[in-house]
Length: 285
Picture (cartoon, one colour):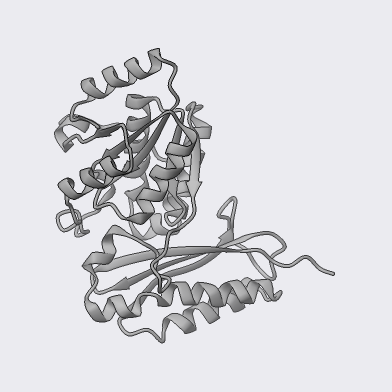
């Protein structure tokens, strides 16, 4: 497995791969890998000739007072996991390599990046979209793989790829969960024991919402029941509960007639967890 630490090294490796017409799959990560990341790698290996994983804790997607410094990191462990998974190369730059001191350009879909999580974390999706665009420009992948746990992020990436005519196929990979339903996340390791025990409430609340929507109830009723279920969990501070059109993320009213994505953001101490689930209303008989 090759390890590239500079943009020039990565460009040269991509040029060599392109010369052989190899289909390249990219899995962008911030490291501290888990089974969810490995599912992305596995999908990329199924569909592409070569797989590159980037590991970069991107400072521009963290706001003031957020957890950039405490974000978990274990590069040696990550590299061992990627070797075992058959990854061909890893892009492992530092911040100075990615961002020149005088960098001032930001990529940001205006509406999608400023709602939901973008409202809670101003500037977050501008940071995400900018780093992903830079990775696409450096590596020119045929396909890129992202987890559906970060549902709004996936929507943002699909939108700017479409709007800017970037020739890469975006693949969303289903959420991988722990046995108790908690969506896998690198941040889970930072949960206090009592909070870790309570955190599966996100999945349980989403199941309540799904059942409610599928029974023909409106989004306001589903939202109230989701909040009531979350309120039962010790230490859960609800940041947002949103039910939106699963394709456009537009707000909904009444009983929906198309798929709904239920998006949760819940804090346990200083750890913000997100989760989501799609509910599809039953067609009238």
